Amino acid sequence: MSSAPAGPVHLEGASTVAILIRIESHSIDKIRVYSSDCQLDAGGLPFHWLNGVSADSSLAYLASLASTSRNSAVMAIAMHAGASADSALERLAAASQPEKVREEVAFWAGSTRGAAGVQLLKKLSDTDPSERVRDKVMFGLSISKDPGALPLLIASARNDASAKVRSQALFWLAHKAGQKETATITRAIDEDPDLHVKKQAVFALHELPRDQGIPLLIQVATTNKDAQVRKQAMFWLGQTNDPRALRFFEEVLTK
Image (tube, rainbow, N blue to C red; front, side, top):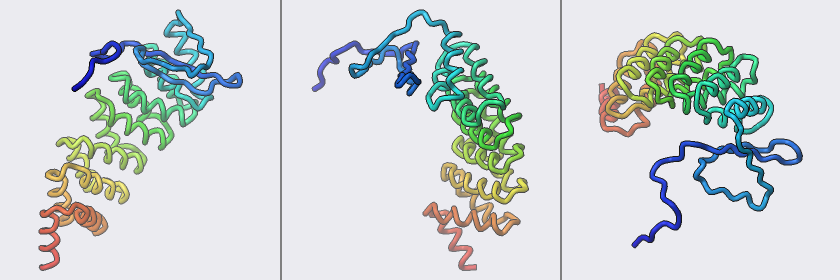
């Protein structure tokens, strides 16, 4: 038996958020973002609510904190609606900004900014000199719900100058598990010049749903020209405990 809720029941999420800044010893300690319908308890600490702050003023202030403080300023910027927030994130993605800030921009652009975020991720993928940042771009593309993200992830898996970034793109493609993604993974096994990328692509096959991945792993283990790649495929087949893999090993061992 259930009782009636003590307070109002919200059937939909709030359309606005509150940005709270905690100041300690005359410097900013934390930035937090809460839904406007969330009940807050300051624990007896002094609390000052600022009204009438424009979005542009909010964005400018948060941007001034993003590169100098270990806080959630980039996240708070990404929570703002409108093109001004996209522009603020683009400025923080400039190569002159600290690498850590650009990595955060890549995450929040993918997770919250839709088509504009994907365009920013494309710019980072094409122009950012840091392998670490482009690595984060691959994750940002993987979590974006915008349809433009997938073609960019596939293109990065094929064309990024860094073997590490290509490997990460393949890893996240494996979690998409569609026909285009699978084709990109198998193409990397056959054509990528870097052995590490080939091995990562074999691992990506292991991460696919079994009905997709196991037949492809068996095919690689049987037909690939590179002995190390075949060995890698057999290793991941051995981790599956799938009857098809066991039958394959039985056939190989009894020839």
